[in-house]
Amino acid sequence: MKKIQTRFGEIEFDPAKVIHFPEGLIGLDNLKDFLVIPNEKQGPLFWIQSVDDPAFAFPVTDPTNFFLDYAIAPDAEERKKLQIGEKDDCFVLSIVSVGEDKKITLNLSGPILYSPETHRALQVILEDTTYSTKTPLPEVKNKE
Image 1 (cartoon, rainbow, N blue to C red):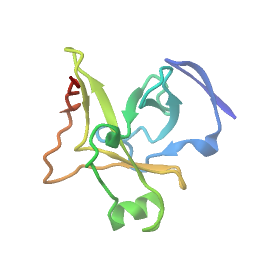
Image 2 (image 1 turned 180 degrees about the vertical axis):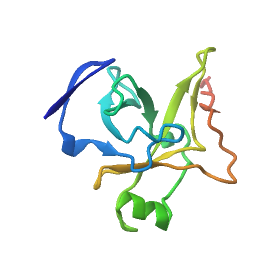
Image 3 (image 1 turned 90 degrees about the vertical axis):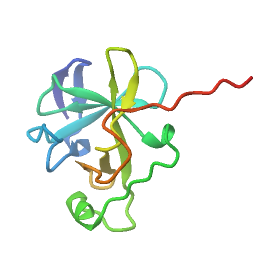
């Protein structure tokens, strides 16, 4: 077990369970290893904590919790980088942002592909998409 000091306090972790981003994150290619930190509150969000820079963490979620038709699958090159086959599981995560206006958005044009089998992940950029880096959550309609 290893330990790092983070904004969440001291965290002890198993190096075998670290999520490795072989290419880093977009704009942060020096950050390659991350831990999953559950959110203290119940709900669909959790944190990804950098091992390389313990001051850096960000919230993520499964975008299908909010956008039922959002479906992304890794192509052959992405599967190769994730070290998975066509039938292996690959989960899609979106980075969550909260603006100054307290509006929550998801980065649906730059999703993270994650293989639980290999503990590898990639952030990809979708081309020709209607989604944006700051896609607002759908409005909740009141039932009356």
